[in-house]
Length: 447
Image 1 (tube, rainbow, N blue to C red):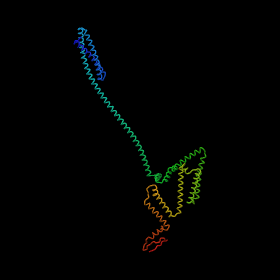
Image 2: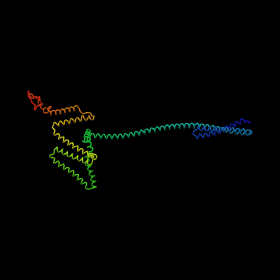
Image 3: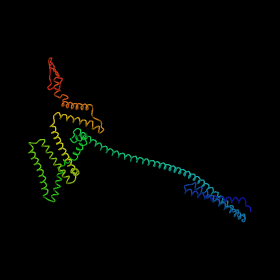
Image 4: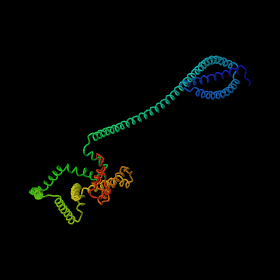
């Protein structure tokens, strides 16, 4: 059975109307979806895929409808077909009108889609610009943070340096104060030195023995002497308290015994001086000194024998101040005894022998200080040609004195007489010296 062209056109129009209906529905769905979502490109792609699926279903339904219409047209009569055709034409007109409306709406939707895409692009560009600005601001913030940290570190370093400088300034101020005090002390020592300061300055040039004696006397003996009253008072109070606790009368009897011994010694010394005062001589002083030292060394030997130990060593270990005081006393007494014995020896000598001895001592001392001691200590020699001239003249004088004593050379009186013989007198007469100088008295002849 063949279809007429008019019937075929009606079928095509129905298919177009169906497709338009589907397209309008799809476009409405796309519009609603585009309104809901922001990303329009993805939505359009999805809607196209859905449209293609609906179009495939439409083709399937169209083919099925064609088959059914062919079957139905084969059975219907012409009147029925005419009525259907009229209804279909009417529907076709309605569909055309709706299609026109839908086309307008589609055009409007396309324009709206273009606007939305343009707005989307603008918003995307704005968002990208904001993101870029935000990244730039983040970089600026990081840079500012790093700069702030560096500045904070610099500030901390400067604070530490300031603290160090403050400490250094305080240290320098202390040093300056100490230097000013030292300056004042040195000025005081220079302009108005005390005896101790002068001795301290001079002791640096002394020999080791003298310097050690001075240091010990200053550091140990002098404080003991200055603080003796206070220490004795404390010692007396201590023993008086201890003895008073045990025995009430012991301290009284002990004080009486000590003062009695002191008074007895004083009275004995006064009695000895009264007996020897009028007849006191150097020999008696030497005798008394010998007796005193004999008793002293006997006491030392007796103490060493009892305690089986050196008395001086025990005293030095237990009481160094008393040991030093005892040593100074013994040294002073020994020096006095030696001086007395030297004076006694000098009394037995003539003036010529004394001058010879003194001159020899001076020469030996000068030689020891300026030649022997520097050569032994590897120091530069301090002697000069003047020293050698002094040695020569000294020994020449000693030689002349000895030769005059043995009669080999004239003595001082001979030289004095010789000077007078060479004196000129007024007139033609002139004194001349006898050729034989050994004759006594010298003969003076007139010419």
